[in-house]
Image: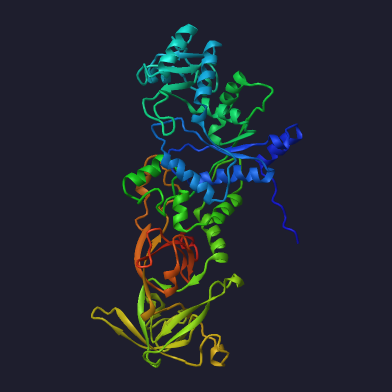
Length: 559
């Protein structure tokens, strides 16, 4: 049966309506326009999937354009990280563009607006300009420089460009309407002086365009058909259109801005300022810390491109903001890794088992499936010996009938191996169990076809052979915050909700196949969860990051 096609979301309906109204298929063009002032996060991933998804659906080009108009915050490091993240997600951009590519054209257009009486240089302080803006219910006050002679504004604007004035001494403002009900239309600032070198243009420019002036004109220059923004830019649409009205040539395609709602993720923050604070104060180790909601952090945590794209598709594109529980993101990575990740055995909290009737010095290499969800994944061999590690929590001296793991006098099956029975245990002076003595049924080997191998026992445990065990550092990552909306309480700082248990480091024992893994390789630790080899790992010092447990451990904490 053919797969049922998903219904169109409202942005796709807009595009479809435009095609019916006269747009040509070949005129469609989209863009993803990040500012290179930080690393991309999961919210950006939704926008990336939306824009590039539209490009794939309509076979239309998608530009990657960096809105690099603020040299005080932007760096080449962020440009490189953004490009790496988009490529990792599996998307290709048509052209790599920069707002800084258009600095000269934007300047020339600004000069023309001054000549046309639609822009002027204001010599007031930013504080005075803000005070004169008025309120949503009261009109603003016109600047005393609003009717400054054109030639005077032109001369001052050139001085601004040449670096002959101080920061904050003058700005260029559009002359629109100080009584507009939209505060953004009250003579917005178009240019300011910034005495800082730009990561691409160096010291060539001393003035930099504001977002609202640069963004729409960049869309126009690139002939972007649909400029998609999040809902906070809805009030900006009127200004976007006003600037286009002043420059529009009817021989060219006129871009249109349309807005969609953010999808906020629970138990995290995505404000770049707040993420930077986490880095600067050492709460996390960097922008790619596996607890961060950045794409680079998710990648290091073990998330896959498909899991993030599936997540973005599953939450859809809407007109209202809402909170998506992080468990939904975790569900998507579990679903993806269940199909793809090889299975291995590792013990996170080891206690030794000695099989007293297993011959000393003997070892076997037992066949184990790499992934029962994928027939093509094949098999591997796992060593078995007289001494094994199991999880401490998988053994109790005494337990009730609902405990189906190892206890004195009862049997369990060792995964891919034999049935064992606990006979006794050894404790240290503090009463901690240090060793469990067991016997095994030599006829019960998994897959041997014997009657004993078919015998049913209620518990199956994972294990690792002691003489073959590879020591590994395992970093158990969890949610960075203890509440769904850490920045939602206006009376408390978001840092007050940090989860003190967001990272626990344990020394584990793993089967020897882990030595063949490399950075970024995903695996399932059987019965425990999904893990990935960290970038700091080496064959001599293996390091795993936990991606997610096998099940949502937070579900039981919900009301």
